[in-house]
Length: 140
Image (cartoon, rainbow, N blue to C red; front, top):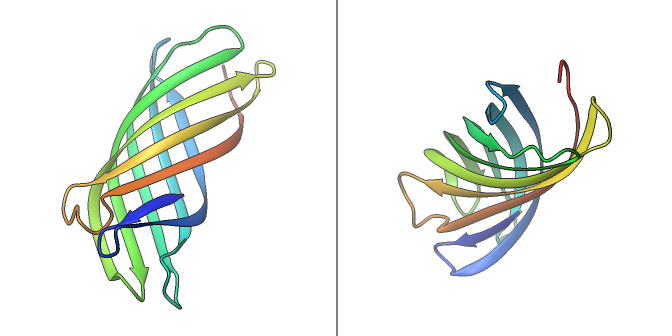
């Protein structure tokens, strides 16, 4: 995760892990839900934690084995740590990803997600996450 911290105008890094759920609404649209938690190293003795859960809609361009997709999601963000205190912020995320389907059940891919806060935009003007992912699909 790469973060621009508003108080320092510097880029901070961190590591996060999460879960992603997809439910096919049609051939082109999926309902998506994401939740993850991570640690941010903001240059202070105590790192901050960022936890979020989002839900939204994804557009899927299914091209046989390679499956590019993009999504727009809304949700909530919990931030704790010595330099940011403890706060809850509503926000949104825009994501793009590319999956490779090994067979009808297994896929692996990458996703990049940019988060935006509706309030207190100056806390983290830019919050970008990148993930490697592996997934199992039921009923595809």
